[in-house]
Length: 189
Image 1 (spheres, rainbow, N blue to C red):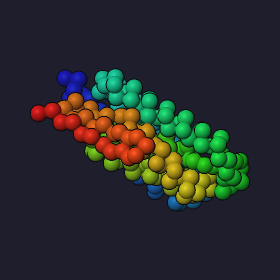
Image 2 (tube, one colour):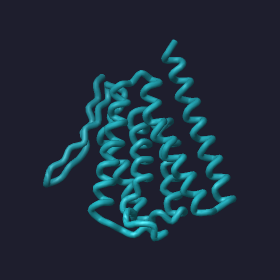
Image 3 (spheres, one colour):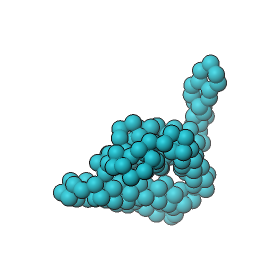
Image 4 (cartoon, rainbow, N blue to C red):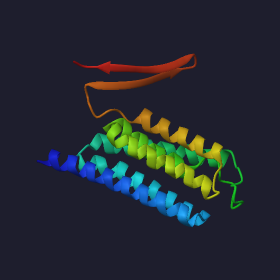
């Protein structure tokens, strides 16, 4: 019974997220102010973070919830370290914390976590919302493309490397050392 409700909730959450994305996409260009882009990107980022935490809870997936917290926590720490280590003036001139984009790293971390844990049907819409967040940061004049692309890379890496597939019959293990790296896949039949 709960599995049925969980699947219904997952679909409803994702449909709701897509509706919010389209509403933001339609409303933002109409106003086209930097503040509107900033607000829309923040709302979308917060929605992704909430979805990455609520979805595992709805599915009673404790490991997924912990992995989601871990991947977003790592993305946050790396991003804040980058901001402290490489001070860069924002395009709007407000401060020297432009590099890398924190909104983008958190959004892509949440999206990558959901994508890796629950598959492309959840992950693809989440990745689209994360891309919207990145564009909104540029339009709001808070970041340039280098900031956003670096934030995206941090988020994607933390989401995909810390989270594993929910299907226990398939395990993907990244590895690396000073001479190279790769990905190993283990499949149980």
